[in-house]
Image 1 (cartoon, rainbow, N blue to C red):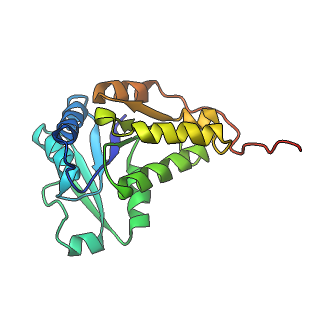
Image 2 (cartoon, helix red, strand yellow; image 1 turned 90 degrees about the vertical axis):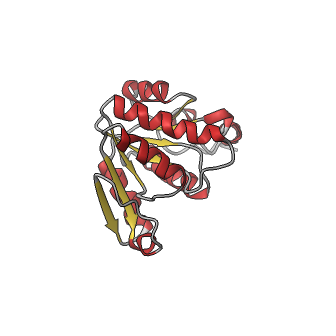
Amino acid sequence: MRRICVFCGSNPGHDPAYRAAAVALGETLAARGIGLVYGGASVGLMAVVADTVLAAGGEVLGVIPQMLVDKEIAHAGLSELHVVDSMHARKAKMADLSDGFVALPGGVGTLEELFEIWTWAQLGTHAKPVGLLDVNGFYDKLHGFLDHVVAEGFLREGHRGMLLSASEPGALLDAFAAYTPPVVHKWVEREET
């Protein structure tokens, strides 16, 4: 893998473990020679992971919409900063630049990015791994909800299994390296009544 896209909070969160996980992920990426693609901001966990990769001599590509540049939150010290017209263009550019996708803890923006990229994988738009860096059980309730979605017939088990998860960056990247996308029909058939 050449580059991994990281979705994460533009805020640091309350638990210091979130920052520590962003540092650990950045250090692991740099140690493995994997570049970082992220949202291009100089705030929150986004800045922590970017600054960590940069400090270790790694490559960091940021992708940020002009409206956020105008709010003066663009990171000024990246390897490359791509300024795009919209949030939609941002996600498409990040996807094009990346070989896999990791979600650290974050808010609705992180979740939205995660679900969109996972949906693209489910539909066969890409075959890249998608995973959660599950810090201190941050995503436990999401895992439970997704299992409920499967049980209720709205998501196939094979597609559920596409969302990888680990509590340590190295374990998640190892799972990415071993990932083979499943061949699963998208639609859950309706039972005859």
